[in-house]
Amino acid sequence: MVVHHRRPAGRAAGRAAVAVAVAGIVACCAGCGGGAEAGGRDADAARVVREAADRLVREGSSQASTSMEMASGGTRVTIRGTGVYDYRKGVGRLKVRLPQDAAGAQEHRPITELLAPGALFMKNRGAGVPADKWVRVETASLTDGNLVTGGATDPLAAAELLRGARGVSYAGESDLAGVRTRHFTGTVDVAAAAKAASAGNRKALTAAAKGFASAPVPFDVYLDDEGLIRKIRHRFSFANAQEKKDIAVASTTLLYGFGEPAGVRLPREKDIFAGEVAEEGLPQGS
Image 1 (tube, rainbow, N blue to C red):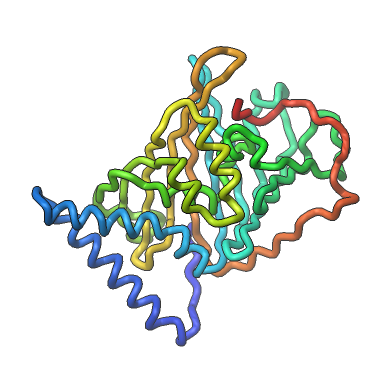
Image 2: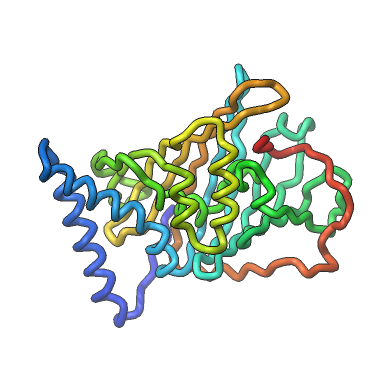
């Protein structure tokens, strides 16, 4: 469900200008034909998509729902999460629920994840970690930059991937929970996205650019009339060194409740587990 909020009157003019700009670009894309003129309109569509991360930062915060579907051979699992994100601080909190068979048990407590620039914190991780302790992972040390490993793609990182958008096309209008959106498709050059990313995500996306089995990464993104991402979906493929085959991952993020306070507090040093953690429970980007 999408939550609507009243906004301060002083921001109305700016929002109207953004809405008009996006609507104008979409109107151009809808009538694209051939020749140089069409190429110019495609460039406008690409610009709007590439600037979507900046638009989220200006907005401030939102609620988020995530879904990660993994397929390898005949096996398919889905991991879901819900939470909040502060785009200005680059921090978020998600409660991630594993499917029953992914943890090797019928029941598994939800994993709380805190997303921060350069780091992922997990609680209820299992694998011998005390219930009151957090596990900290440096995202730049992961071969996928934590786009997949944590079971949910960081919403801001998902948006920043669009900075490397290529071959952007307008695919028409869609209704998402009562909100009119414009659907764009294309592919992501992860290396280009890493170079254009904010300081908080640059190292992680640089690691991801080296780790994925195939490039570029296909995407679908749905923007509302104000240029805000309402839905974004990436389709990754990375190599499983142990099984010597690729794993296909589709990561989908829904954003709503814009303006909701995030209130994310990162763990204190004394609350972070210092021991060795077994690799289990979550998909691995290697």
